[in-house]
Image (tube, rainbow, N blue to C red; front, side, top):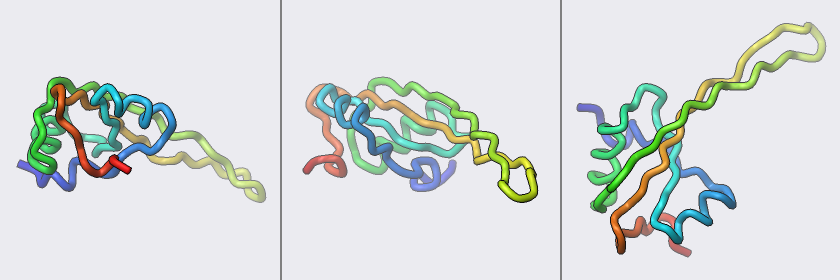
Length: 96
């Protein structure tokens, strides 16, 4: 099994993600190869909360080009996990 800290990369900080925290829904950037059961187990192992549901979405990296040489490149693809917790469960990382 992978280390839980390798699966969960960072929390997503945005207005939309903060609005979902009131409904016990948290958003994380996760490893591109992580599966839903791995994400589920990693969240429970790191914070000790009860996870009800995990939704994932893959985000394709933007195609970029340099100004001077017109070479094309691509930003890395990312994956996000939207995690729904049981009622009353909180992750203290997001509390202000």
